[in-house]
Amino acid sequence: MFRLGVLTGGGDCPGLNAVIQGVVVRALQYGYEVYGIEDGYKGLLYGKARKLSLKDVEDIYWLGGTILGTSRKNPAKSDEELKTVVENVKKLGLNALIIIGGDDTLGAAKKLYDRGVPVVGVPKTIDNDIPLTDYSIGFWTAIETIADALHKLHTTARSHKRVMIAEIMGRYAGWLTLMGGIAGGAHIILIPEKPVDLDEVCRIIKERKERGEPYTLIAVAEGVTVPTTGELVAASTEKDEFGHIRLGGVSKILEDEIKKRTGEEVRSVVLGHIQRGGIPSAYDRVLGIRLGFKSVDLVKEEKFGYVVVVRGMDIIPVKIDEVVSTIRKVPPELHEYINVFTGLY
Image (cartoon, rainbow, N blue to C red; front, side, top):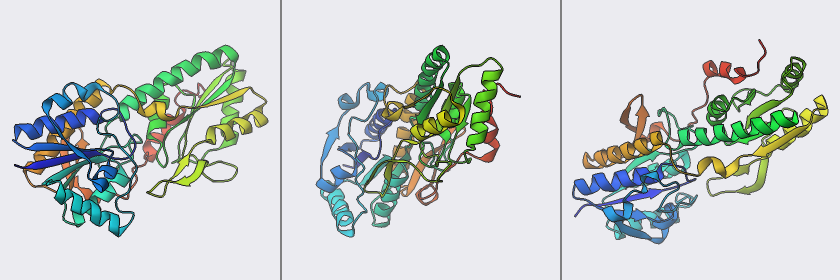
């Protein structure tokens, strides 16, 4: 009997359960057994897996998060742990692995593949910064969440005649902030790909007030560098197993600087983990099922060392080497949308 393992690694996001349901349904159609690896790579390191039936995944497609659990465990942190993971794959009798995750998770998947583990990847990043895929699972649900939050901030900012700053996820790429900012009508959108000009920001705030718009809503990505120092703002200096610090706090620095320069009342809010939580949108539910089906199809075709990506309306395979260790940034041609709601022309 062919045994297929599936795991979710890194940060959670809406749509993961849809992928899992798609994997199980498709695999059972092919006569495979499916084993869910618990808590991401941590489960592989400690040999934690459970057999999944149709009953186990019934109607999970609309649930947020992941029923398998996840972690930021890096199995490639040491050669010894990588060796243990490879051995546990054999002990569990797994003939192939479907690994759902972002750049770090897929980077580790490539190292497992290089060690002889049959791997197929499904890109997952709330930041939408994995190359060669138009959109990642959960991205558009996050955009809806951000837009809803910004709509709520509009009402309080307008009522109090304040400048409101919303800090949005996005370490190196501003996709969430740009698309969420447009969907939520942010007057100023600040992304990592474009240096922040504080003088310009303050000018827009002042000119909006002069023309009868007494409030301004700013959307800023957490990965925007501080204009006065050129540095990223860290919420903690502690690093995860992939070497990343936790970002957060640039909105507060901007709050203080804008207040000092304009004399306006300024408030900031960090949207945080709210952005990656909740029920997936209809788009992400459908996308998740499709990605799950296609990933199992690649397993059946023995097309290992590939990931399934979205290209237009199609789900296609690309080599895992082509999507890891590279960040997909917002291209310059989309920067013109940053000031679409300034109201100044």
